[in-house]
Image (spheres, rainbow, N blue to C red):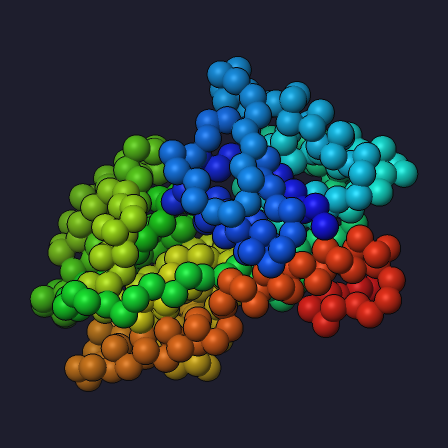
Length: 376
């Protein structure tokens, strides 16, 4: 079976979708299928997966986000039996279903990647709404199956009125070696410094409790070159936040070390379809605090962290509870989290689920339906 992942960009390998798409394509190839990724230039600096990577476009495509050659290639691929799996929306790259002929033997899958959450749909609505009505929704109506990373995202798809099947399959996580560095009294935030990540909740909460927990430090890891990063650094200065470091972006071994030395991870997001960094923290044995706007409601049940409402009071209380625990308690919680990731988020298992979905669609969505696929 020929399976093609279609994504707007793969050059930022630190981004969640880039990582997830590369690993999914790699494991689909490992399971014996013809697996490809097609994307707009520029190419990532390194490509180690087994899937074939094909990059389309030129300097104009990089600046505009439009690659006619990529859309033309999608149409060519649709003339034969294949799966075209698109990732995210709001880009012209993601409109390729409109280019497909109606009697195409190809099947189209779409992963919204968090774009359907109420927060995301409302953000910059004035700009999105005309595009949604004229181009984006008509393209999505031609999708044969949606992919959601959790029940919450599947609910968002249904709330928008889409009645196609939905495959509910989480993202996978690579389990790192056990930490070899000594843990520190450090609370870690790691990710894009963007409005939806909730740093405007975290900084006031930390300012409120920092004096009560001497010896603890908040470390914020993420790119500092954007306007929102500048706003958050200004907010920290205005509040007089103590024991707080904006460390910039870390990748590779330095990123792994940041997880390995932290005792607690926090992601107070207003909107996440999966929250890959939560899974990475748990994989590194670090318990997590995140919000009900992510699919990590099982954290408390699993004894691996806290899932709270995205409010200042809730975050302040969760941080106070976590930092007040007896010595060794956070490490014990982190160990439970690592075992959970090992059990439920192995890439090979989840890729097999996706391949089952692809095969079911290629067979006309008839016969035995995979158990993880919802139909109305």
